[in-house]
Amino acid sequence: MRTGIRRTAARAPGRAPEPFAWTFTTPLYVGASLNPVNSSLIATALVPIAADLHVPVGSTAVLVSALYLASAVAQPTAGRLAEVLGARRIFLSGIVLVLLGGVVGGLGGNLATLTVARVLIGVGTSAAFPCAMVLIRRRAQDAGLGAPPGRVLGGIAIAGLTTAAVGPPLGGLLVGAAGWRWAFLVNIPVTALAMAMAVRWLPPDPAPDRGRGGFREVADRIDLPGILGFAASMSALVLFLMGLPQPHWAALAVFVVAVVPTVVWELRKSAPFFDLRGLAANGALARTYLRQALSLLGVYSVMYGMTQWMQAAYGLSTVRAGLMLLPMGAVAALLSRPLARRNLVRGPLIVSAVTSLLGSVGIMLLTSNSPAFALVLVSLVFGVTSATAMVGNQTALYLAAPAEQIGTASGLFRTFGFLGSITSAVICGQVFRAGASDHGLHTLGVVLVGAGLAVLLLTVLDRRLMGRGPRRKA
Image (tube, rainbow, N blue to C red; front, side, top):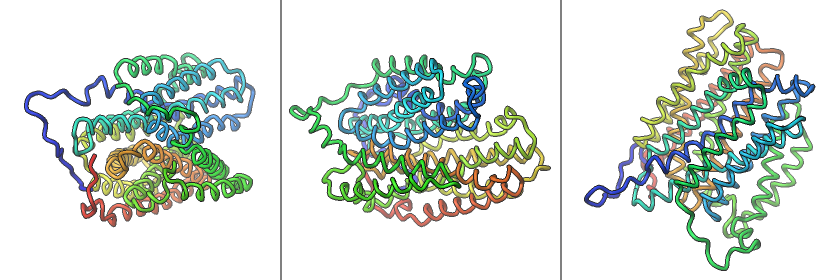
């Protein structure tokens, strides 16, 4: 894997059709924005929901965790289904689930119904990214491209980074103007648009193999027992992590009981859902997963931790605290496309680690008396971290994952990212358990320095990123 890769396939003389025209990429970008915007959109609706449903504010946190849990499990599952059943079919099925979740949530009258809606939205939005990667990889192969289509991958990254950043302000406007139900109902027009574009512009899936359409054969091809074992193991692990610092020992016990037979089954399966042997042999892919988890741990720790600190210790309102973090999203969106177009990997990842370290040191130096400019500067630095980490790791994923497993690999890439974001919430809960204070913020900075150092080591010591390993064709 090299830091810059050129296209190896020469185009035919004359003006060949553009393989990644806007009609192909636009529905993918819209789909890729659904998960991050729904992840952040709900933040401003939690208090109004609690007041309207007459439940404690703390109980509405289940609406956040439900989507995280559903997404962590559904991302690789959707990728596997896309590989076997067709990426377009699974993409459209996901959009239908998001539409259904928007309707159920918009009409829901109790917390249980809203939780079901969030699960539907989490499962549905999880189909977009792995399906997009399958479709992009297939289109690149058909076009004879030997390098990642950086412009398209950059667009996917921008769609996720931008919508995650605008989610809280957009949620504030919607909830303030029309009520909390629009945190769910907004999915209806967006999914209707995405569905119309996908039906019209996405290419049809290859015809399924004849004689292999029965349930048993499909279940064997997708490794249904492996998917169910992974779902049970991941659900238990996420529930255990989200319960810290008060551990849910029952969840840990379920994790152990589920993971052991799942590992045994996957090691014996000839075409497993979670290819443990393949992952162990593909160190570049495993390191990409770890870098993504650690990078998002840092970024989301800033989003969660600094927001709490700015409100409780620095004295900012909710709106002003959110505005302080907008530069992070803006910088991330602006940097993503030019970086992705060049198909760079090692350089952006080194920049990501270095800026994460600089930003973490900056967090350690902040106090309740620091000027507002210092807070904005830390936000800007982590914006660079977010963009370079996403672009570098996404391109590394494209290069390291086997072409026939790009869907599952892309889903696992997102799952590791969710584990990083969940862990960041746990860490913030620990350092601020006695209240959001300067001391807690400085402790958070020390933790993030450790995460940044780990990312730096995973990058500079990776021989594949120095171009010494074998190159993988697109």
